[in-house]
Amino acid sequence: MRLGEYPQAAGSPDGAGELRPRAVTANGLDRSRLASVGDESAALQSLGFSKPLIERLSKRARQNNTTLETELLHHPGIQEDAYYGAMARFLRLPFADRIDAGTVVDTTHLDTQLRRPAMVRLQHARTAPQVAIVPEAGRLAGLAAALINLPMLGRDLTITTPSAIRKAVWAAGATRRVRETVATLSEDRPQFSARTVVTGSQGFAAGMIVAPFLIALLAAPALILPVLHPVMSYLYLAALGLRILALIHRKHERHFEPPPTPGPLPTYTVLVALYREAAVAAQLVACLKRLDWPVSLLDIKLVCEADDAETLETLRAMALPRHFEIVEVPAAHPRTKPKALSYALAGVRGDYLVIYDAEDRPHPGQLREAHGRFSSLPPDLACLQAPLVIANGSSSWISALFALEYAALFRGLLPMLAHYGLPMPLGGTSNHFRTALLRQAGGWDPFNVTEDADLGLRLFRLGYRSAVLRRQTLEDAPVRLSIWMGQRTRWFKGWVQTWLVLMRRPKRLLGEMGLRGWLIFHLMIGGMLLSSLLHPLIFVFLAQGALAMMAVPTSGIPAGVLVLFCVDAFNIFGSYLTFVALGISSMTDHEKRLVGGRWMAVPLYWMMTSLAAWRAILELRSRPFFWQKTPHEPAQ
Image 1 (cartoon, rainbow, N blue to C red):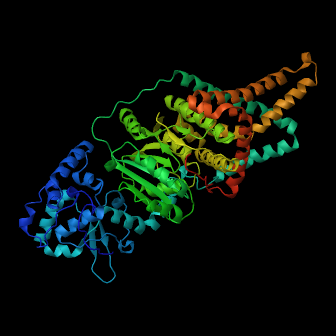
Image 2 (cartoon, helix red, strand yellow; image 1 turned 60 degrees about the vertical axis):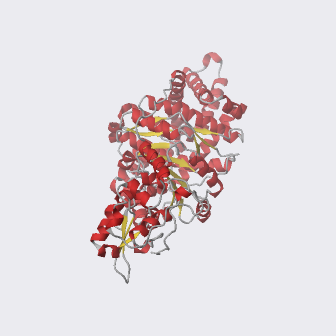
Image 3 (cartoon, rainbow, N blue to C red; image 1 turned 135 degrees about the vertical axis):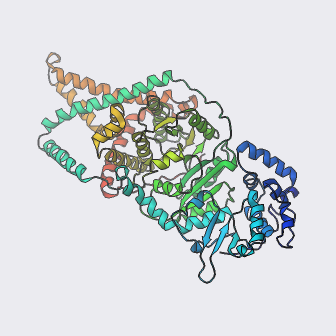
């Protein structure tokens, strides 16, 4: 621990006079000095802060249901080191602006100091143990009285800052914390973890079903394809029906803006996982600063890999406000976003929590809307999904189709699922949670590379519900095919992981989800996977049917061949049509102009999706937990 020089002021050296405390005499602690301390306001006056400033901050503290000290520390110009240094000078105690993490003993409850830093015990090799404390202004008189009555107490105490304690605790508990992050879900609740890719019973079932099917398909395709054909047709028909239902729901959907919630606001945590994101760091910080929420009630954590030097250096150079915190995640397998988020969950202070990606530009009022919805809906509502809107739909045909796809999903399909109380796979960002319920559910699975879909379905299994918001988050889609392919391969791999995790005990899953939820899960996850994998095959069936009908007179066409051909044609073209219609109907006029006529590339887009699905199946075997990084650039 480094004992620094006591700061000369609790405000900035060149700030307004009201921010600069008066000098505190160094004539020793005695009872005559305690009379001027009293309550929190009097304590701050005794440290030299002016009455006008204290009155303004007291009013803000009453509005936000915080303390005067909390508002003071978030006031522009107030330096944390200087403020606590002034306290140390008043109490005649040493001050440390940094704590050596090697002196902090890691214990079971050490992480409580991440959420409310108050004190840590420091062990020194050659000197007696010390306790580093963060005094509160409201208890300053009591602490001063204790030091007068028990002079020996001062030998063991050092004043420090909340930031110094948090930084030391993050470092001191890093090895234990990352081990718990990786192992807790898979060891305590293995039924929810993707760490085991395929269980023994699943492997046996796959061997008994898939192997004979493949052998039969190769040996006698003429017998197997006619069986596979109607299965695929019904699968496409069901997915088409789901999109039609979403179209109907969107047409009749009514939006109700929740009324402003009376009373004080809670603390809200914002988690952003960053990896090699130096290029967008400034844009991200600027967007987060625009969030409409009192800064004294914001807990923004920028979660970075400890070996990502460029991103860390970029963030540190920004002189971030006090409600921002950089969390360094130790390098450990698996290197995934959910592992980073779960690691940071230990230090989350908010009653509510939202996840953003590094390239996101959330609507400033999104937190207000989420809080209003949480307050007006039942307590079993665990998550709210904000719509993700693609802002660069005009950049390429890939980004245009991506924008169409996101509009259909986030403003068409997910609102319909939420309305009917059906399981809702979440998007990877802009998920707002009740923090307590998120922790009860086990947080994110470090081994699932689509942790969003997995968590949304797990919440449903546990009896919680999800809903949607209206205020959007803007982000940019991949512009180049290679980047899109890597991202989509990871998504499909994660959806396979999710399906395998949920299907370990199908009967139990049916009981947890109910029949409707069970069917929707299979259609949304299993059906999407299967239809993507087999999408090229439906064109084979179409061509086969057309050739079969051309080979015989019209009057001699078998009824079964004609019916399947018509169903195939309806399925494929109906699927394209409803996909485009749901996306277009969910877009604003501006978005439609950005997409233009590139929606006609949907058949090619779906073929590329099929290729990504096959790549995912192969990668699941060779690199099941590999996280394909999607590079981002600042928005134009």
